[in-house]
Structure formats: structure tokens, C-alpha cells
Length: 416
Ligand code: NIG
Ligand code: FE
Image (tube, rainbow, N blue to C red; front, side, top):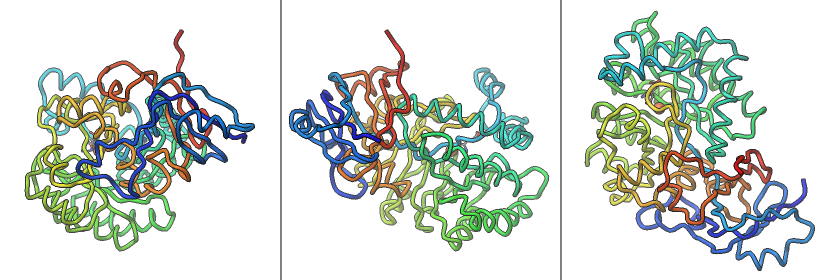
């Protein structure tokens, strides 16, 4: 692969800074280089600086002229449900008629309806649909996603989903961080206790033996898994060496944030209902909050997580899409940035940090991705705008110009 040089970015958003997740005012420090450029060799960033300096060192590198556009690290989407079959158009229409997420789930829609379709799908069918999703992510400027299982709920179907992720990783340029979410809902053919036993004694040991996941997650919520049941799953996963994430305090405040702190989890996700005590517990245990405003928006709710309080408390906030067919059918991180700024009062710069470098740390890859610094992978996006704030400001219009993973162009937008 020949070296590559990217020149003339109106703003090169480097996110250079301390080698740890950013907190407080660090969240709004983007390390911008005006008329910036970079040199890439063997898929990694070799040099970053003003364009005229980089130009002097171009040598035989292929030159990409960013033409006065914004260049920034690819988004890292730290919470997605990438692999599933079908869609949930009926749920969507029912919500438009006024039914709630929980009512629809009870009436035969919800997670279970996707489980039925996903069980019936072959590995090849799931892979084909997952590839389509992967392309959507790339087109939105996302180069790494965390992806959860959770629509199988039998040993074989959960493993099937995780294998699809493994295969997708080989066939698509999107980088994937796999998470086991057997504790997404109770399989209807078993009692809650029986299912919990299957997750702990059958699924988790297989997932760990086949090294199919790096993280274990659980949906800790009324009607899904309570605090005790969630603790059992997470403790078993921890013993097997998996790191932990959790869907907590989404619809009700059940003390889920505190549980994630107690378990020493890497992240606590959702947190729409989390109060000051929950925030304090996360801070004490250095758990990163992953906020998912797309799901609040798509469920037609108005209760967004308390992002400002979390930032003020010193938490290393992360933003993610929660891409899934039910509560958040969007792969678009720019849409999430828009929601973060308009609904949660995050500054555009804070939102960018939360969806790049902080997200990278939350998937344990902060040393390799999330910023444009020498030594990191050359995962970057050229956006068709001059100022990074435009990413959150214009909404509903794709601004991606081109996307690079490990120095290779993997997506280019059309246009006149
Ligand atoms: O993150 N909360 C649980 N899981 C997903 C929803 C999944 C679904 O509805 O299919 C979420 O919102
Ligand atoms: Fe989710």
C-alpha cells in the first residue's frame, strides 16, 4: 500500500490530548489544526500538522486534497445492535398511534418479534443484512462499532449472531467490537430462572471458549432482568474475563447505574432515569456513561439523560446511536450529535469528543483509534463542510464526503 497524504483540511480535528478519556473542559478541546494535513503509511498515521509542513514531506505519497473541508477521526459507535433480521415497521406505526414501547412488547411486538425473525434466519441471510447495515455506518462516517448479540436467546442462535459479526469483520472494512447480550430478554419458552441458568452455565462458557465476545451486556429493566438477575449474569461474565457494559435506567430508575459501578463495568448505557446518586456512583467507580439520545427521540419520549450534570460531575461521557430495529433505527452519528446539542445541551465540540476519542476508550481501543495522532490507525472522514459545528447543525442531510479505514478509501459520496 503506497503512503497517503491528506492536505488542506479547513479544520483537521485531531483530538490530540492525554492518553485517557476526556473529562470536564477537556471535552470541548478538539486540537484543531487550520489548513491541516497528515501523512499516512501502512494504514497508520505518521505525521500530523499544518498542510505546508506536511507537503514538504510528501515524497512519493499519493495526495488527497481535502479541498477546505473538515477532516476528523471516524466516529466510534460504542453501542449498536448491528445484527438482526427484518425490521419493526409495525411497532413504529403502533407508536405513531400512541402505544408505548412496553405496551407494544407485551402485545407481541418488541424485542421478541425480532428474536423470532432472527432465529429463523440463516447465518448467510443475517450476514447479508448486516453488510447492508455496515455500509450505512460507513456512509455516515462511522469506522468502528461495538455490536451486541441478543436477538437469538438460545445457545445456538446467540452464537450464530456472534459468528456473523466475526465473519462481517473479515468481509467489511467496518471494525467491530463484539458484545454478548444473551441477557436482552427472557426466552419465552423458558421461565426466567431457567433462562438465567442457560445464560450463565451454557451461553457464557461457550462465548468465552470460542472467544466470540469482548464484553458482556444485560438489559436491566422492569420486565427484563432485575438487579439480582443482572448481577448474576455480569458476575459470571466477569469471572470468565469479559469486560462489562449494561443497559440501565432506561425506562425506570432501578439502581442500574449503581449496579454497574459495583461491578466495575466499563460502561453504563442509556441512563435516561439516572439520578444524582447514580451519577456519583459512576464517577466513583470511573464507569463511562454511554448516552443514546436516538432511542429517546425514536420512542417519542422527552426524557433525555442528564448530560450536563454528568459532564459537570467529571464523567467521561460517550455518545452512541443504539442502532437497533425497535427503539433506535438510525446508524447516523451526525443525527446523534444534533440530538445531543439540541436536546441535552452538549456543545458541538463535547459531542464530537464523546463520539470519537471517549467512545474509543469505552471499547478499550483508546490507544489505537479515536483521534488523529501519530501511531494511531488512519481511520478518518472528510466531511463536506468547513466548520465541525456544521455536523451537528445541519440535520437530516448527509455531509460525508469520503471515509478511510487504515488509510484506504472505503466510501465516497456521490453528488454533482
Ligand atoms: O437499547 N433496551 C433494550 N435494547 C434496545 C432495544 C432493542 C429493541 O427494541 O429491539 C435498546 O433500546
Ligand atoms: Fe441498546
